[in-house]
Length: 159
Image (cartoon, rainbow, N blue to C red):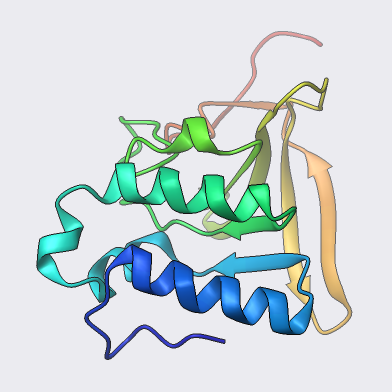
């Protein structure tokens, strides 16, 4: 684990440390939680070209055969459906969007698979919950429209 909270690093310095740790541990996966926090941890002079630096870092790590999981917090503006604050969605092989929505006066967690490169995948929006037994995948929300806009309404047409 590399704690970047108190560091002023360049992506190159972080990448060097990552490669050293990956090699030593023979790691197969790297988690960057979150891209927003990672950008904030960089020295200001390295934040200017964050997108380009992130691209180079991901290329280096994937060349090592490492799977990279990145989380990214997005400002929840329902009118603007975005998948990355950095315009870096093109770097991902798969994108899963998760968010809270209000349905029947309750906050519900939903998710949908937006992209899986080179694969057919479900386009459904589903409920999910995190319990002490793990993640529970719920029903599809096909009875609703406007889920991602933040204004879900029940469909008025038959399926």
